[in-house]
Length: 222
Image 1 (cartoon, helix red, strand yellow):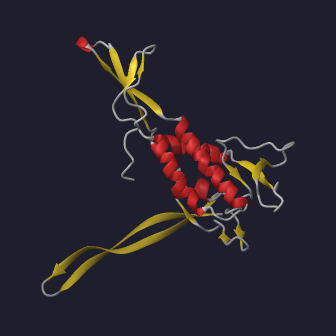
Image 2: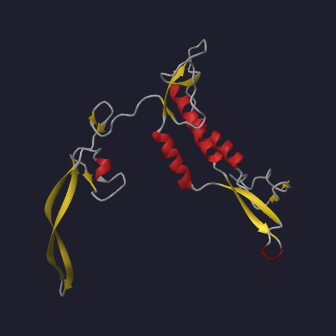
Image 3: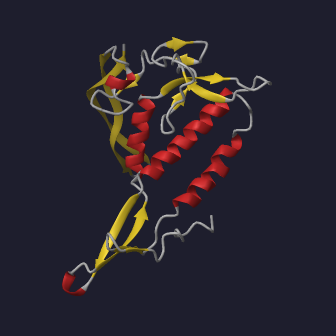
């Protein structure tokens, strides 16, 4: 990681037509991509379908990042004029990339393996049920097998389902009843919560507390 610095290829070049030159410290995206290939892809050593899928998805993520690099510029000149500009490339916001990948995850392409070698080893991926050997796009996320339905109990996959799980009625996140209960709705339970409160030290030597209680609700998935 000590070699991860500014992009040396983006230094000193001048674009006369657009009136700017490289300056500042551009993110070295090429180094990052090559490092991620060595680091993330290194574990994919088995020559099977999952290896092809993982390598494709890893590369798709890199493509998404590379396509969304941003050009930022700063003006230079007398009295606020923009006689010349120096520009550099920056990484997009992490959340922006997350949103793009989440959208691609929701639209992931179902693929199957083509075994074209004499050894019948997986050679490349093609879109399932497509005519001919149509390959997925470089920026598509792909999957080979459909994920289990984690909303329902399934002993084969180890899923316990979400029936009876506690949920948050007002949360829009994964702990919220709308998502947690998979559209089945939820039950409301009322109970009285009792606890020790207003505790004070009495001389000598014990702690005296009041008993507090309140009526509260909990929600569980149907």
